[in-house]
Length: 409
Ligand SMILES: C[S@@+](CC[C@H](N)C(=O)[O-])C[C@H]1O[C@@H](n2cnc3c(N)ncnc32)[C@H](O)[C@@H]1O
Image (cartoon, rainbow, N blue to C red):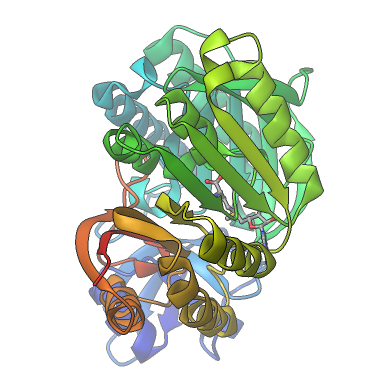
């Protein structure tokens, strides 16, 4: 196994458990054809990790496979044996969580947090969706899929349709359908059906990583009468609210395309249901700013404030500039939205960004709302259940949510 020198800062990060080796003057010298490398310290050749080499990736040149196995006999065969064990372990973890009792969309493998770096695998009804962020896997694509198929067959006694996609950052750049199957199908979550479309690479129709959070807000929705869902996308929160008998739900999004899917999802679940006649679902195809300004004017005339507002703006996970723009958005939007919330009503806000720590997010949001009203922080939301995170890998801990109860002072 070839040994390569690592940048001292990389060594420091790796010693703290960080799983990546990024582009620098040291990684530029890694032998381009080698798939597995052992990284050593530049000063005394001390081995630090065995890693998967990814010369094709623009930023992440290596992903740790092992921090303690520097066996010189390590080869493709031992790698595949490790891979099989890790896939089995990841799937067993999900089986123990019993998730499939309440939803058939969940992550089976959550990349670095399951020690299968760069590989996300989602279970979507009888489809398996593999998203790969590390081009090392191209050399082992068939083995990865075969091992996964075998493990799924053993552990779930079921066969699936496989879809595979390579991604870099937020771009989807290649897709292969590994078994002839439709790209469009339904998944079920908390007794609701959602349409999934895998031909739509970046936006398949439902954010599986938020499913555990959706479950945790059900008790609050059960007490809600009038929900405002801003940046509603295909309506996961809206449908969940209607299912909890919320009398009025307003869904706002700029994209007519996503709102059309929301209508299809609504029809799938509520069209033939007589209960829903007493419920009202209002869809507004407008920018959030515009809708909120109009609602503020209307609110002055007829007193109909919302008792639950959800704000889940577009993702900005990989972009530092977008971090400041999402906080700027909150700075401008929150004081207005708070005025639309009834006394003791709820405000649930999210940010999808790893550059901002939970502590920073909380203190910035607290500072914004403190100026306007009394509020009590009720719950904090992070990735959980099928989407594990690791303290040593903050990039994987991107989703942050805060639920406040607002009192009018
Ligand atoms: C992260 S998604 C929201 C996910 C959604 N809350 C859910 O639970 O499935 C962000 C959504 O914001 C919408 N969007 C982006 N900019 C917008 C704007 N200025 N006004 C309204 N919607 C916007 C996008 O069309 C997209 O559907």
